[in-house]
Image (cartoon, rainbow, N blue to C red; front, side):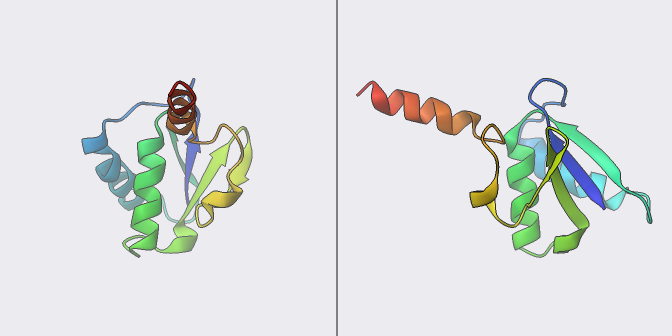
Length: 99
C-alpha cells in the first residue's frame, strides 16, 4: 500500500505539473508486501491521487492518506478532518468575507 501523508510543515512540495506523475511514479516503484510512504506539503498531490483512484488508474485499496498520525479515507472527502488539504478553502472563505 502507498500511504500519502499530508504534512504542511514536513512534507515535500510539488508543482501542479508534477503532482500526478509523483503519485504514479511512487505507486509504480513501491515495494510489494509493505507500506511505502510519500510525505507531501501540498494538496495538489492528494487531489491528483483522488483523481487517479476515481479514474481507476490506481486500484482503490492501493492508496491511503495520513494526517497527524491518523488514516484518512481517500474515497470520502466529506470525512476529511479540519486542516487536511483545506488551506486554499480557508483563503477563499476569507476573501469572500471581504466583499
